[in-house]
Length: 339
Length: 295
Image (tube, rainbow over all chains, first blue to last red):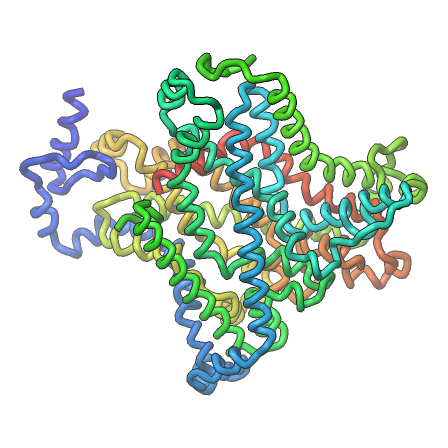
């Protein structure tokens, strides 16, 4: 033990530079850091060049495909013509935004987006919480493990497969309709009914991700001190009261955190999922912000207006996260980051 | 058998039965569609027609649908493309992620704070679809497989997970290696890589699943249908009911693909995920929690 603790100190004097010890506790007292700081820039550069080289690929990819495109959002203020490129296209000020606000399709897409978000908050969000509580109450480890590995699976399937599965079961020619027909009952076609499309989206999302969503809530329940349950039971609290007064408060920080994250994503609703089914129900029911950007920009070539819509979405999303976080702080919760 | 703590007491039989029923129904809802898809893909045409378009339990098994798929419909090629993009993409993505995670785990590296914030900021600000598309276009990557691989290769979230794992390695190991004169590359290769194999495997599997399942990337970047990966071909076969253009030259195949062929395609696209699934479940809750808690 003594050797272990002494070793870094030896190294420090040996190399004239604090050893790299990411998780080592700060040693109180004399620290050779000032000396290390004083080391010339060139020497540190030479010493750290392998490390800098290691981070270079990731930094380069992020620079090219995150940072430069972020700057490229200026297209929102241009009449962008691909032939002319960034440098020769005309600046048009806020024109793209005014054109956007005059487009009825945009408002329709926005309304659909909010409706879907609201529906998913209502019908999707509580499901993983309830499932987690149910699984947690399963006492047989074998059963618990089996059920868990079954319901995590859909999370890893692509949306193409999910929609295909739904079509096979619920579609106009799907299993359930055939069974209904053979029993002389009238069928339904939920896969192409614009009126119920948002419910369909939500149920697909539940089927795919509700099981996966339980992981984080199960972890939250597991982190609750079992003695709390035990002493509550001793004092005569039944299962329901234990749930209400111990389990639920124990999960509250995680629930609030996920609510905030969901709120920040309020304008993002299953783009791939909707794009796959947009043809079946028509754009009136299925157009959301992301599909609006895709069809207006990439398909129809209105680069400026589409980018303006995307930029607006990004800015509003960021504001929503910050606002939700502030709200969480006001209620005495921790939120995403601490104050 | 049961792990029930003593203080919970024995549940009433009715409650137990209800709970069992709920669990059974939940599992059935997940498993039933798969059962129907696999059965339909294996059934003969007569059986499907007699049953009205679906089969829940094939009486006679036929692999005709699978044979038909690999007979010049372009599906075989799309599978090769998907596998190639997944393998190369995962390798490239892991290369960037793990190297950067090690570099950024070194607190006294030059510019460490700046570079770390550079990476973390991308968690908050995501560029829009159009600017990224224009960038890919500008770099002449449209209609190349690089467009599917590079733009999505680096995620700050993955870097944070791997970095957290590397930071948990006892620093004495690094110190002694350095004492023995090992350089950074040597330390990375003989210490960091072997010790973080578990987390690399999990993150790699998640990345691979992402590449395999990607369908919007190819839709956005690949105009040439002969370059389409499996997910896009499956979309046109199963959801849009027509075969991809390169095969419509053959008159026999211009008709909409049969039900069993569609379902066989779904099975083929699911298979790699099912193969990777045991490994995913083995490590995933651990990986998820490392990411969630250590941040």
